[in-house]
Amino acid sequence: MIRVDSVNLSFSHEGEVNQVLQGISFAVKAEGSCAIIGPSGCGKTSLLFLLAGLLQPDAGTITITGSPRTGTILQHYGLFPWKTVVENIGLGLQLKGEAKDRIGARVEGLLAEMGLTGFGRHYPAQLSGGMQQRVAMARALAIEPQILFMDEPLSSLDALSRERLQNLILQVWRDKRITTILVTHSIEEAVYLGRQIIVLSQRPGRILQIVDNPGAGSREYRQTEQFFHNCNQLRRILKEEDHGPEA
Ligand SMILES: Nc1ncnc2c1ncn2[C@@H]1O[C@H](COP(=O)(O)OP(=O)(O)OP(=O)(O)O)[C@@H](O)[C@H]1O
Ligand SMILES: [Mg+2]
Figure 1: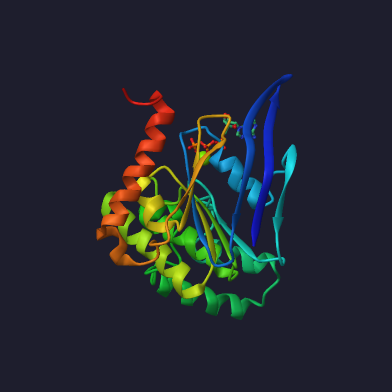
Figure 2: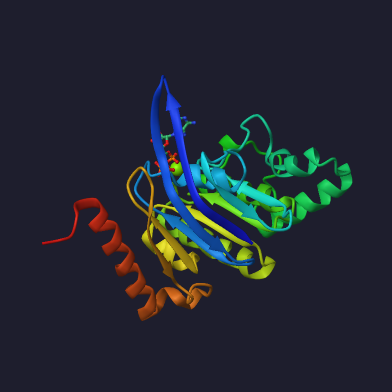
């Protein structure tokens, strides 16, 4: 469904060229789940923007078959502070020109699904981080996307809220059969949620390894030996990148 071929990306600033991504190639199947992990500044957000069509590569191609509807959850949620929860969630549908009563019904359903019933008239600043995160999720799901792009959606949450929302992402992926691409800093999160894990190097981001992780997709996976094994493997790859091979 998604195919990335030899993609390079750089930004120029005052005549200085800053190479951000180098020779990136991978493919994600329809209904697949892919996690992207790598050090800060290595180009994860840029890669997600390329996939979402918000940036164009300098070289290489990105092909997405069919013209799927896509939903995006940006780093730091991207909610509009001056709009209420209901208005934020309904935004995509409004832009598509949906009728008001249909938007109302859909938003009401999503509020319930995300455990936000009763908070529709609140503004984002009146909600906890976890609740804002669920609003961002509801907004992305409102247009019934076939692909969901998420940029570190859970990074500012405490451990328990984070686990709860990881389970929500898992459930969304399983029940709605949405292809998910998740950028994360967390090794455990990548292994829990990505059947395919793309490990990037320091900037300029190159692919260090693509780890197959077919066990991901159930709640029980967290307690399995394979889960710990794959977390350790990922930790090793990232550590070597950080310090060079351990003595
Ligand atoms: N619009 C832009 N103009 C110029 N440089 C940019 C732009 N966006 C990103 N960069 C540069 O590209 C590099 C990669 O940024 P990116 O945001 O993709 O990293 P990241 O892996 O998502 O980092 P983090 O984990 O901290 O979110 C950084 O060096 C950044 O300064
Ligand atoms: Mg980022």
